[in-house]
Image 1: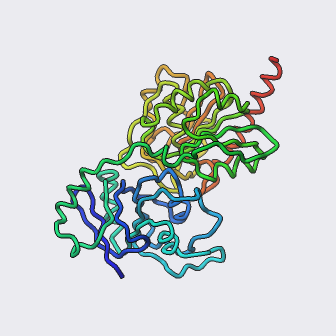
Image 2: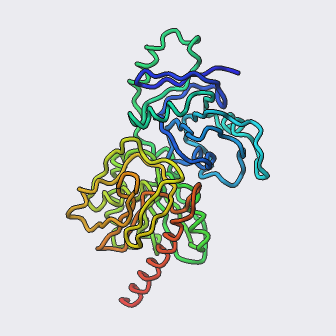
Length: 367
């Protein structure tokens, strides 16, 4: 087996064994805590440009199947595991994780102490990292560390993963325009399950074009990166206020908040996993949720806006949900469609459906 190194910007190095692509790769190194769901994680567009560390020690046990992808092409830069399973046991398995990563040209490293690495990332936050050849093949590790530290990551992550042109996912129910900032297919599946007539549009689609599609509702999807790097989206969402009910998810939640004047801040180590508890302040109910984000809405910045907090994370009390008292608009930081994870918050799609129905009745009454 070929050896491979993970070199971090703080000078920490890990040596293990290579799998997947033979290419070198640099990315933001983060960890995710899900015990299952690695297929959804590696195909989630929100992970664009990242090297993901799986905290669960055995990865690949149920292989890769055709049904659990969250995008057609992965935008991941690498994966780190303690132990890779090359003989999966599951009736849905179509290929191994190793085979899929090789096919998609994504490098991986196994056989390192992922517990030590996770503790490091919890303490210091996400770090720049590089997957490269083993130490004996590198003439100057210190030079490599300096190169990693000085690497500038692209900020056009949403542009990389958003659809390049509009496309329909037809239904006979409510017309929903989905603004794609890096959409997980699970969102589309939930809307299709409710017979919505969906049109997916690129992230930079002007507000007047969206309005010309006569939407009954608008969904702002999840996506990668820092929300301040998608300034044009904020202006678009502002122009859509009150035109139709809006449902924001993940990055879409942050952008909706910014469109009302709120600000976002970076979390110490982010929320990534399928087992993160969130409290619904309206029902006083606790739900386990799937999450994948490094930024959150700053609570102090909500002062003077029409937004009120509806959900909080029980681990750190950060904001997980908002709603407008002015227009029919609400958002959540987590993934209500699960994919992967528990379906505790799936009812939020039904809430969106009711909001659209109520808005339509109001429009008809005023006509």
